[in-house]
Length: 273
Image (cartoon, rainbow, N blue to C red; front, side, top):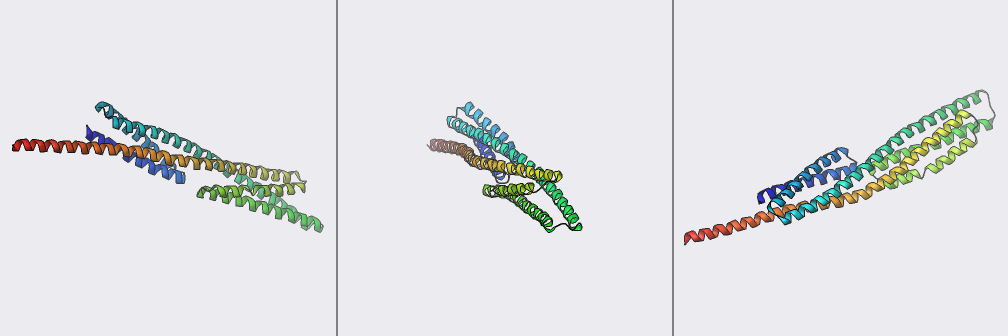
């Protein structure tokens, strides 16, 4: 009766430990390989718990049955939590794609605008335009450089926030966008060429899409923080239940061993008599 119980208990505990290890790797680094490994272990753990349930029913082992039910319940909660964490990761990957796309559009439109202004400035210099006109063109180039610096800052710190998993860095980057929009409006107010206005609108649209994605990332990262706490709690419950199954199996074996030793001693005493 008890040898299979110990074997199943060991399988349950070992698999639960492997799951905890893989889930921690997934939580720390959004490691999808670790997540895939954990899912495989989930299947194994369900199988071993089913074996424990069948063994408990076959030999009417109430304590084993109770521990198996506790472990299965904790496992279901664990799996549900992992599913939510995976959806959050999918959301982050989608937002990251939007940021990559709009980051490229931002750079493209800025580059076109700068080249356009430089071409016009060269023409104005060749034409010996009045000083005020040249200064206005220089000012536009200076402003677009400020806009570029803000955009670069937001992109770098947006990436850094993801690497460090630090929401505060993202929030700091998001705060920079209002200043950028004011600069864009300042350029629009002093622009009449349709092509220049279109480029400025393209810069603004890309920046707003990027900002929206950063805000979405803040929400996703906060979801991830909450889910991480639930995962740690659920993992501890699964491991605790698995330990209880192991302890029960070992206790049962120890009891059987004592009974066997006692019976052997009694038999030896009878033989001596």
